[in-house]
Amino acid sequence: MGFKRVTVIGGSGMLGQDLVPHLSSCGYQVSAPTIGQVNVLHDVERITTELAATQPEIIIHAAAYTDVDGAERDPELAMAINKDGTRKIAVAARDIGAILVYISTDYVFDGTTNRPLTTDDKPHPINMYGQSKFYGELMVSELLDTHYILRTSWLYGMGRNNFVQWVLASAKQGQPINVVNDWHGTPTWTGSLAHTIETVMTSGAFGTYHTADQGTVSKYEQAVAICKAAGLSHRHISPVSASTLSFDAPRPAYTPLDCAPLAMPHWETSLAAYLTQYFADPHPPNQAGA
Ligand SMILES: NC(=O)c1ccc[n+]([C@@H]2O[C@H](COP(=O)([O-])OP(=O)(O)OC[C@H]3O[C@@H](n4cnc5c(N)ncnc54)[C@H](OP(=O)(O)O)[C@@H]3O)[C@@H](O)[C@H]2O)c1
Image (tube, rainbow, N blue to C red; front, side):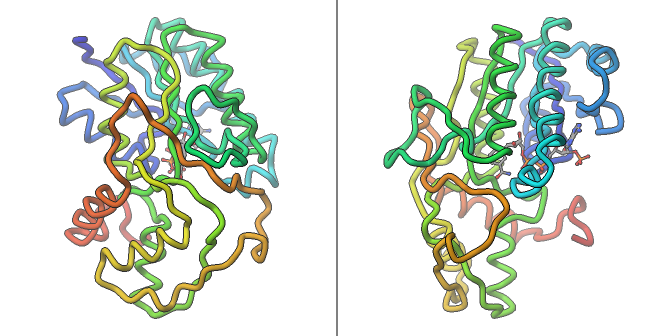
């Protein structure tokens, strides 16, 4: 549709670190303000002025308070960032005349539906993180028509230490780990999500989308698959029920996303692509010392 200027809020995050270079490689002029420049805790006028400076046609809001257990301990901060912060970004996008892409989560669902979730399924979050993200969705849909809400799940990517890297490290060290076998969902590579965000944001078909890689696994099955794909033993991994572990926040138990009409890759295809990238350079500059 001929868009040129895109701003990514949350460009330093795990998704942002794949998304920003991907959009640049697609030919967009991408700005990615730091948290010092656009902090969603700032007042809306300051945020609007800062965002307006680069005249974005599309704003991708990928910043969030993403610590699920932390959100349970500090719900006010989670709401201030994920609900009120998203409201400010939506107001700014509307006032600038930019399209808004909001990245949301499978955790808006309660996980009691024993089939992949469609965009017709009703959100019912069971923890503060999911609730704050769902409120963020409501802010976006109430404040501007020209929006896309993209729900994704179980992200991993090069930009940050993540579940895949934790499993690989434990396998290399032979360190026994317990992994939950009664949470089911779909791991999603930030690389495939970045590609899908670009496809959706230029479609002109505003609304809510499910954008996860495809297939359904438990966290335990994912961990075993990671070791197998990397040619490592998985004998150090023990399957455990989530009920035997203590988390501050309850998790929805079953949240695979039905992504029709989008064609997302199977999660094992994405895992192979990620591992190729990871083994070529396991410690890119943004992770130095991590
Ligand atoms: N990770 C997952 O498994 C997962 C699953 C489903 C959906 N999502 C959603 O996907 C999106 C990207 O997640 P992610 O894993 O890439 O997150 P992440 O790695 O935790 O990065 C969060 C980003 O938000 C920024 N940020 C935090 N507080 C901010 C504030 N007050 N003002 C402005 N920016 C702020 C961070 O900046 P600094 O780096 O400067 O702190 C960072 O760039 C989020 O919307 C998340 O809810 C994630």
